[in-house]
Image 1 (tube, rainbow, N blue to C red):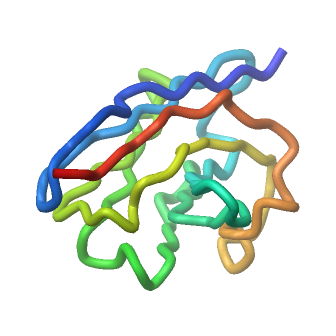
Image 2: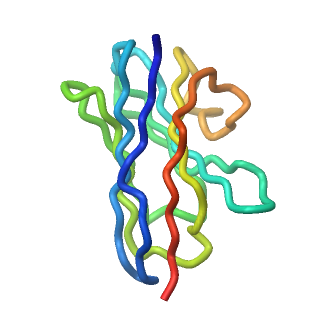
Length: 126
């Protein structure tokens, strides 16, 4: 059974940092694409970043390029999202999702993912 569990969210001041973790179980991480998504109140779910575990290929939405970094640890079956220089606009519930064989070219689109975690709240506020 595929399971994804996010952790690491919280309250941080603008300019601060957080590292989110997505712990996967029930499947080998190195065969899947893992995406990070976020959803703010009243807004659609947005793709933030994604990584193809087999070769480390990544993609980022323009608004987080240079601030967020996605990485993986196949031995721990965990994907991370390091978020630096956080802004109030980054406030949202962050979700990780997994899909087998998804091309990196479309891995920021939530509709293509079959498996989702429960989400973790990130609040950026002074």
